[in-house]
Length: 428
Image (cartoon, rainbow, N blue to C red; front, side, top):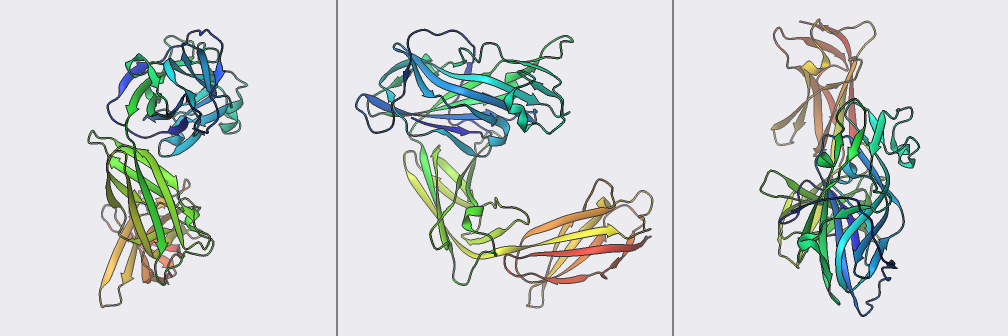
């Protein structure tokens, strides 16, 4: 059995709504055998995802996962794992892979949840207990506002109503089951003044047949190089598709560099058939590095059920970035009613052929309003000139700065440049 945790914006295929409830179980348990192609076993892939929610955090500790059948309990996982369901929406985390389970018919799939908490948009925290171990993820000093009730889920677990009310495992068979944990419907505030929240999990169980795969290969083109300290391991292969119902399915997988570091490969599997967009987002620290590739990103690829499609990218350059910052010099203020949010940062690129290209983006002030910053990513290595342009209502506000505007700056491929303006005077 392969068990993954996948959180995306939409279910795969046609979903069946299956409410969860806790109840007892009987019979002696068995543990799923280790991988190895044992006769009398089949494979099951279980995917866990959530639907969008207004809750900021939804953390649960899954201490056991098991199937219940005629022969009792078959334990799939016994090692506790604590996850914030919302942080996994665009990624895949492996809980269990390539284990086998005995052939047979199973009536129930259950997650034993030993604890959890939710954090609301206003910062209030509701936990299964004040000393729940998963609260280490809560910012220091954040109080537990109230109780999150999780009736019997730590004993008998959350019962998932399976498609057709059963799961049939055949010898040498392989089945994929998607379980959608709907956070927005699974946590609700209790009526009255109790201050409690209660967990009533709502789950969508879906059969996914003949999942597709997308292989991604990236190679440095002639003369191209990555910035110092950056490797292909700092990027991921990300695939996304429009489901046609206003939602998007997104999955990402790690790029694994070769020994020389000049190429890398990834395999995104367990995907529904269809047309996907493929990109290579940067996962390292700031400043962001953008890869200029052929074909250009996003690249489109169509894959059939049970098949593998490939996308080959050649990196022609690692794009540059420029950060523009504006700050008030000592004793200088902006005119009444004006903030740095009333200005755009403007970059003008010399294309070297007698033409120029302009890029604009609004300045983002800090909390005090005395400094503002914006970063232009994905730029071509070239000479630029940076300036600040007023975008507010009349009359126009002019800024006198050091250095004088426009300020010249040249960036190399993959490099991060900065332009810092000190505002020495401001007036209409």
